[in-house]
Length: 308
Image (cartoon, rainbow, N blue to C red; front, top):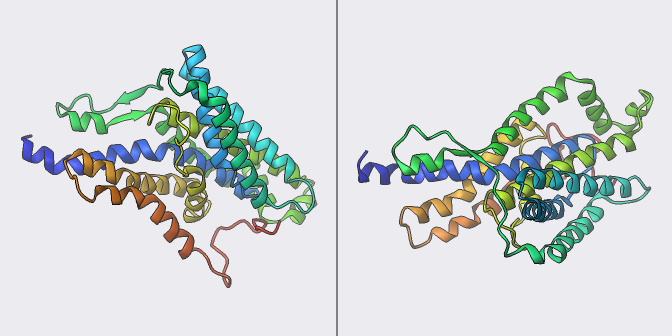
């Protein structure tokens, strides 16, 4: 392949590789939020959970030399945040949205406070699998370096899609999300189910944060998230609370986020920065398109409401 052909394929390959890299945290946060919302609760605090998970993973990886221990610590931190959110929301007249915003600010502030000593130290990265090793073209090789968390996220999407349809646990989450009265008639405690679902959702958001600090971009800074936790909420709505849809939508968001860097990598020096706003514009379009006072979104859990 000559230089002209490499240049021709440069942007698609860069977008492909960027979509895989950028989409991974979206995958985990959106799957976590899908579990939470299918139980009838919304968690806007996942942005704070994502940032705190990134800081926790990086700090533990620096101190232990193991990115996997950092990943586990991030998942545990996210679990604690999720359980705390779920516990507060069990009380009467507590608004999910208000609690989520409070925990978003609390998690981000806590991460910035405890993370300051870890801005300069270098942590070991999570490994990637070089699927492009049989190509001689560096651009193809770089595009096909796939982090293991992306593959885990893809498998998890399928497992959750199947579990919601075919397992008792999935049925319980769906029943609680659709009708608290029906859940109580079946002998279930909706508060307990939502508490556990919110905890699991937080743990997955923590893993998404660990990916940010331990692989891409692979460092700890106070602005590492760029609002991905909040965008994941719009992504879940766009995906109609379907785990497979979350995976596909995460790739779409990832490709939109990778477009600016892809243009820059092939020598576009003017206007490319406008494409950095693509994920935020996409989020705005989705929220406008799915907002309606007269109709209910297909697939929306019946108990999911900002008034509960």
